[in-house]
Image 1 (cartoon, chains in turn purple, green):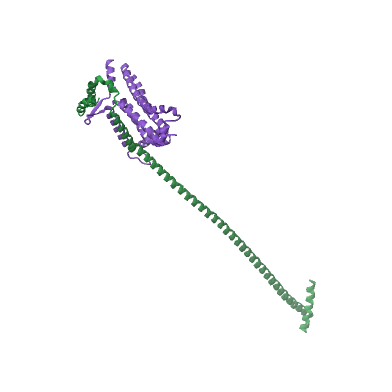
Image 2 (cartoon, rainbow over the protein chains, first blue to last red):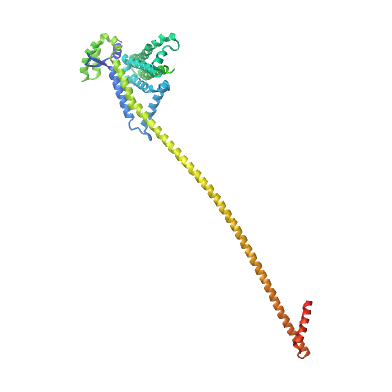
Length: 229
Length: 201
């Protein structure tokens, strides 16, 4: 049991892969390196998939890519509403990134979403995007006024939202990935055959993709709420 | 924290050039075993790296995935619109042509009818004229024939009268046995007789 605990602990630790020797050394974490790998793969796949697109007599590959991209963007756009549709590109990127990051453990990498840096970065970007969208839609004055809506009494809570929302986004994702990982390790200890495969379907695949969806869904919800009058 | 990272990072940095990350991980773990609970929740410069990564990925997706797909769909839409427009124009032209043909056809039909009617009228007139001609000719022929027949009869009659007169004269000469004298006087007598006989008829 001691070994299990140590193994889990080790997996959960955020390792520094290498250090950039400037400013007294900048440690680049494993999550960042894995993110680079994910980025590389995603970009490479994108380039390969979108090669030689035609307007007629399209290949099955093109049809599939068009369908998937349109559906994904459509899904996010439908959550954002008409006015927020311009942010669909970024949020779809986040959806794809978190989705891949959550399930990349299957391929032997350590999920970047197990690093608080990553989930916090995503959450901070989300809340910045929400506020920026609000300012763009309503102007600085309108945005500031939005804190006193619907009544002045709730102003402190609205301001508190600026902290709690990203915190909840960050912790939900982090906690889910962490929890799923710990549970999977424990299940593997109890019975190393068949059983982990079944649970892996839920914890590694379903929950991973679900959390990506939840993250994007909530961010869209916040944006939609922020930009409408 | 940065001091720890530096120590380990240097060690890791040296090793990662030759080996995989696993070896590095072990190095890191051994060095940080004591403070690992802290490291699990570390927040540092990697947050900034992640932000940059995500923004880069979003940009890359826009350039390499969403952009091309949206562009090709827009282009296809454009082409489809063009095709529709072309088809619409063609159909309009075809409709116009059809209308023209219909008008021409109707005109032709009318002309045909008119021509036929005129022809029939002409034919009728011609027919009537011919028949009239024929009738006229037939009437002329008939009347001519009648006139001729009359004149012939008249001539035959005249000749017969003369022959009878001669026969009577001859018979009388034979009966009397002598030549009738004063032939001219006697001839008048016969004529009278004959006239009476003719009247009796």
